Length: 157
Image (cartoon, rainbow, N blue to C red; front, side, top):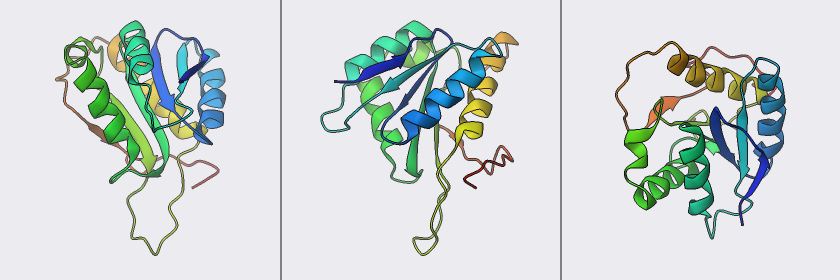
């Protein structure tokens, strides 16, 4: 079901729907900096092709899940849980903690802005550079990252 839209070796970027376009755009920008991003388009979240995600993450050693919805109660948490439920040893084999990128958590009366290409580029660079600098880290289930945390300005914010 899932479709690898772009082969890569440095990080797996899992997404679906509109964010696939943003992910491919970010992957192209990152390629110019020598960062190889594997973009996995889930195509559907029910059923969820967990095996395709696990296969890709085993290959790259890094995972970023990006979606348009707010982070709180977003699909990224479910995807991550299912991936590490399917392959519990994978969590300890990651080069850097896995990450998720989503819209800011805001009151429902406010329309959240979805993360954009610049947000994806910044998080991928941060993940790849952390490993290349041999920084020590402790793998934790979630590293909460929002565009506000990174002080990013994108065309959708």
